[in-house]
Image (cartoon, rainbow, N blue to C red; front, top):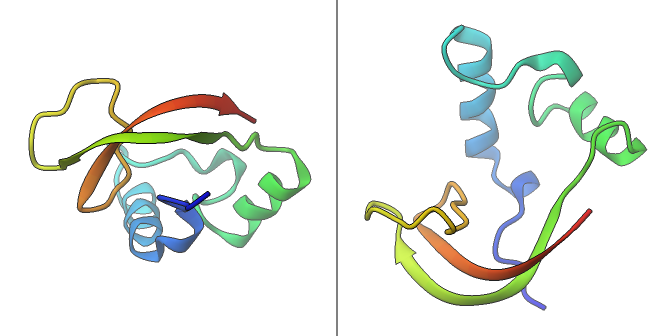
Length: 90
């Protein structure tokens, strides 16, 4: 199986979400469980305090992200989005 996207490897996206979370009340992720993407946040995932969801499936289509995409498309913060036939596993 080839991994299509791994959040931990996307330092730019993590930094953008952290900046937004720390500098505005209108956007970002509430740092209740640690700042998104921080060592504390990843440690809570590793210990089971925060639930980790993994999507596995077969990529059936690929679209450029700037196009209007159907709601069932997985949207990683990358140059393209992937439509996947997935089963959800925790």
